[in-house]
Image 1 (cartoon, rainbow, N blue to C red):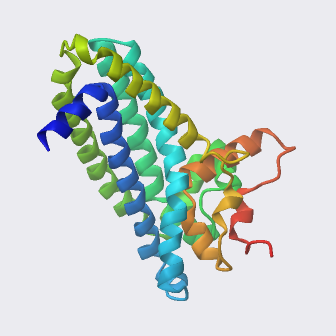
Image 2 (image 1 turned 90 degrees about the vertical axis):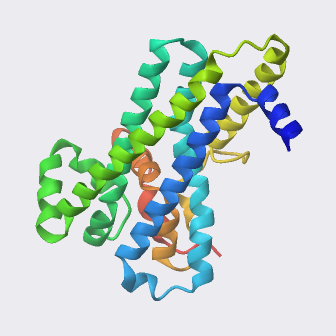
Length: 256
């Protein structure tokens, strides 16, 4: 076991190890947020077989990987490029953006209960008047208690990221000339894998919202999506009218 640990330390740079830890943290977080949406919508969930619900989580991991890679790829490049205080700033920006995504996903069940979709083009249209959306959801759903819990979770997430960064900070300062080449190769391999994950796999095209509909159940298909992913796609569509709104189509059954 010690030999395997030593080999991993020689192959994985501290920056790469930190990124892998953050992948685990974010993927676990988005799975819990998917479970949160499931618990907030017991009526449609009760009509779906457990096996289909389980597959929603498996399919959803592809969308979670895309969002995680979009967050972590700039972080990884920043850790490789900067030193000292620059790295701290890069980690701070990552922690802030990931915390914002956490808050957005926490209130998504209220949006789903109101409109019947994950964040979509309709949510993107509220960007011009965000207070109107907040007032609409707050007047009909328990939005404010959710936001209060979200603030506590954001604080906990920030402390966890800071703790992991400080834990690995000593590794950033290690001088291991013999491990320089293996660690460089490991970082290149990790970057390549992150680019593959960013596009949703090695298929012909990047991952689309349509890939979420694997069943005839609209709720199971919606559950498989990641709200940040569908919102990002909807924002792109909002600025490009030639693109058909794909986020709404994820509720339809798959083509036969």
